[in-house]
Image (tube, rainbow, N blue to C red; front, side, top):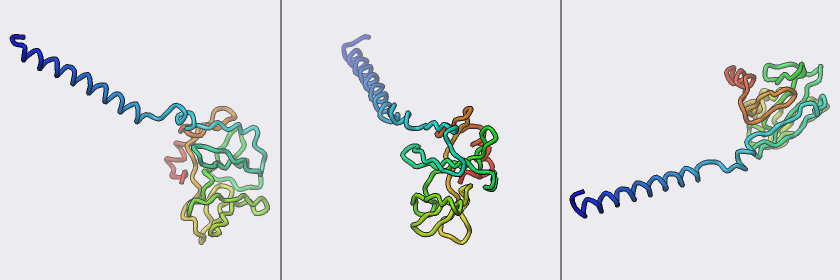
Length: 167
């Protein structure tokens, strides 16, 4: 460093670089989800508590989730989640028409949306000629033993996704 001016230029450049790195670090920290949000990102459902023909309603990321253990007389479908030989219907419990929450009609074995008369079967398939444009959406899931982990994409979910069955 030959002059005081060169020294001041180098010092200012160094302080600017440190400040820029600190600013970028702070910006990145604000963009990362909070630990509480990360924890809310997955929900574990114990399927041993499910009763045949009676839907359970769970919550995942603020959305209601239907889990219906199918009875032997309910038709099988490739959208079914199979765990230990039992078939389950798992879906986000929001009508694909306007986002209402359908009610399960046990006598008809259907999910009925009272807002505009939408009807879904026990596999979440919308019945033709009614307002819902598509089947109930299947949330990302992974099977771990006798539990269903919502929020992570397991091989069963990826296979459904590859076959365009999740929506």
